[in-house]
Length: 198
Image (cartoon, rainbow, N blue to C red):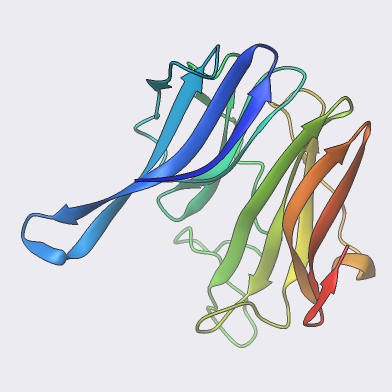
C-alpha cells in the first residue's frame, strides 16, 4: 500500500494512493487498485474508494469540494465529491484527446494510420477561481512522450463542468506534470522540448 498525497476542502481531508495485490495464479503479476481515505479531523480515516476508479493520479480540494482524476479502463476520467465521501463521475467525458476516434471507438490518426494516443491527466489544483487539471496529449509509438505531444489544461469553476484551454504554440512539444493554485491564479510546471518549463 502506498499513499500518494493528501488534500483538503473545507473541514474535510482526502488522501489517495494505491495497493498492489499479487494475483493468486501468478505471484509475479500484481493487480493495482486505487485507494481513497477521508477524514474530518486528520486522526480518524475511512476508506471510500469508488470501485469504478481504475486509477487515480491526482486529487485536489477546492471551494466546492474535491476533484479526482485518473482512468476507467484505458479512458481518462474525473470524479467530483462535495465531501470526499460520495464520488460521482464527471459527466460527458470532458478529458478527451484532440485526436479523432475511429468507428471502432479507438483514437486514430489517418496519416499514416492507426497510432495510439497518449493522453495523461497528471496533476490537479484548486483555488478561489476554481479547479484546474493538466497533463499531456500526443500521438505515441512505443514508450514515452512523442514529438506531437502538447501540454493540455482543463478548467472548471465548479468541479463538475470542464473546458479545455485552446491549444497554441505555448503548449506544443511538451507536457504538464504539476499544477498548484496561487490565490486566484495557477502555476503549471512540466517539460517543453526536453527542458523544464513553467
